[in-house]
Image 1 (cartoon, one colour):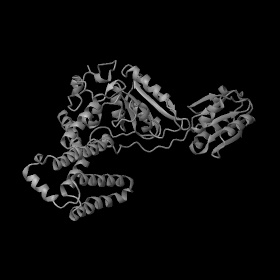
Image 2 (cartoon, helix red, strand yellow):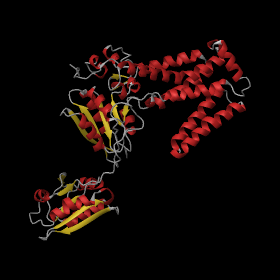
Image 3 (tube, one colour):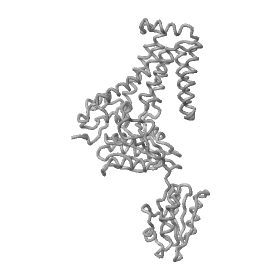
Image 4 (spheres, one colour):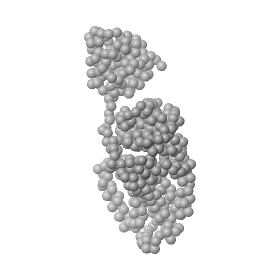
Length: 477
C-alpha cells in the first residue's frame, strides 16, 4: 500500500496513474497568499457546485501552515476526513468524494460532496396497503437507513456499514437492535457478508444466495420487504436486517414462512378482519396449487370426485378435445405463463391491448376451435389469480403448482397426497439461523400462534416470538 508524498505534483500524478479514466478530473488553484491546491474528483458523481462553495472559495484567502489539520479547519464541509494511503484515496474518488491535495501536505483531505441521484420516496407497487404508512425504500442506502433511524429513537439501534464486491464496493447496512437481536445471528450474518467474494452486487437478491443455509432450495430462506414500517417491526421482534445500496428491497433473517401470509395492513384493522384475510390468503394459495392437479386427477382416475351435474357439464365440454386432460391443462398453463411474462416485459401502453388479446381473443378462439375446454380456462384463471394473493411466494408456488399437475397426470390423487407429504417433510426439516421455517406450527409454539394465521389483539402479544430466540423476551407490559 503506497502512501502520498509531501510533493503535490507527484501525489497528483500517482492518483491519475491509478485512475487513468477521462472522467477523473483535476482542478488546480492558488490562494491569494500563493499556496498551491489541487482537487481530484470524479466528474459525473461529484457535486461540483458544493465543491466550489465548501472547498475552493473557503481556501482562496488561506495563509496558514500546510497541514491537514489547519487546512481542514478552514473548510466549511461538515463531512471530511484525512487519509495518506493512495488506494483508499482512489476508492473515495470513485465513490464521488473529491480529494484535496496541497503543497507540503502531511495527508490528503477527503471531502464529502458526493452527488446523490435518488427518486422520491413513494409507496412500493409490490406491497400496497389501504391503511398504514405508505413510505417505501428507494435505491439509496443512506436514505433507507434514515427511514429506519427515524422510527427508532434509541441508541440500541445499531447500523454497521460493510463493503461487498471486489469492483463495486457496494455498501451494505447491517441493522439490528442490540439486546433484542440474537448476538449469534448478528455474528453469523456479519461473517457471511464479509466472506462474500464476488465482482459486483447490483441488488440485494444476490445476498440471499450467500445467506441461505440451502442456497438451491425451492423455498426461500430470507425475508424481503420494501416498506420501512415492516422492516422496523421485524427488527423489533429480534430479526437482523440488511439494506443494500442500489436496491429498494431490504432483507431480514431469520425468515419464517408465515411472514408472507401477513400484511402490514393487518395491524391497522380489527383483529377479526386480519384473521379473515390471512385465512383467505392461505385458502387462495392452496386452491391455486391444487385445483388444476385435482381437476386432472379426477378426469383421469377418479371421476367420482365430481358431482353428477358438474360431471355432465364437464363431459359435454371435453367431448371432442384433441388433447388429454394433462396436456390440455399444461397447454393452458403455459399460455398463462407466457401472457404473464409478456405483460410484465412489454411497454405499459401495450399492456391493455395484450390483456384483451390474451383474455378475450385467444381464450375465446381456443374454446370455439375446440383446442381447450371452458372449465380448463376457468380453473387456470382462478389458479393464476389465487397465486397473487400471496405475491412474495409466486416464484415458488408456481413451480409447486406445475409439479403437482405433472404428478396428478401420472399417478393421480395418490401421487398428489404423496407429493404433499414429501413437501411437508421438507418444510418441517428446514431452518435458517436457528429458526424453524414453519414455526410456530412445527414445532408448535403456543404463544407465537397468536400472531400467525390467527391474529390476536395487541394486548395479547406481550412477548416477542419465541421462535426467534430473542434475549429480550418482553415487548409489552
